[in-house]
Length: 355
Image 1 (cartoon, rainbow, N blue to C red):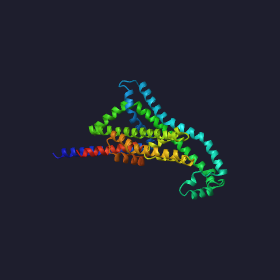
Image 2 (image 1 turned 30 degrees about the vertical axis):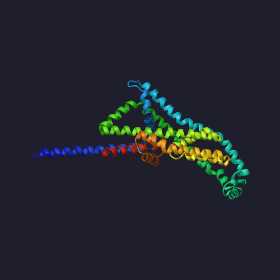
Image 3 (image 1 turned 90 degrees about the vertical axis):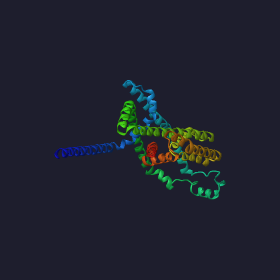
Image 4 (image 1 turned 135 degrees about the horizontal axis):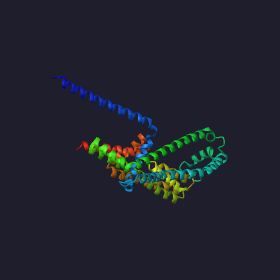
């Protein structure tokens, strides 16, 4: 009779509509949840990136049947180490800046009353006479009442200080949430990792598990390439700072290392250091810092860093470069690690399509 097939089709169509409605409802709920926590998504992503990096260490320290107390202790220890790794350099640099603020204020008062003295080497430079004449007419005279000093004495500096304070407070809050998220991830890590692995295999199969593993390796390799190579660049260029007699060479080397973690930012740090040496008449030191920094950055950016990241992710050099730069432009600092992971996805999909 035709009634039974019709009923079967109606039942199948009803179940299909229910599945579609359920999928739409789940999608809407996930979108609303992400919108609610949108301000803390960067903190969560940073915590996940750091967790991926230290995951091998967590697996070595953990045991299959460890107690909750041991799991909490391991997670707390690793989270504390990560926090100190970030906080201690910032505190050191900030303390040094506060220490130098007194000297800066004295220097501003001096140039306001007496002007900026002309460097002795200025007239030996190409077009030195013209530059020296301009210097004498604009900088060597007392700067009291000049527009630049009025800006410093005015409300613009106070406004900038308030904005900086707001950004600092916001950064501290997000950093605290990042550490809290990292602790929770590390605390429930082994169990959550097993559950996530089962879910990925169930939904995407073995290919999905392989892709997730490659993405984690890409993040880990990118962190190694950026952080380790950055510290190496800071160390080598810092030695040049010491040899050139630059004041506070250790702190400047640390600043250079942090800048070197960002692509093509290290030249800004050692370029300013060389400029300081040049202004103070130390030509040989300025040339040595520029030469050392240029060689170190060239070798690190073109050979060492792409080699480290590419060997781990098995990505070509251009994809590594585009992933780092494009990720930073799209997602900010955390995009430095997300970009190569996404390039890994494209590479895996491309290779699978060619099989």
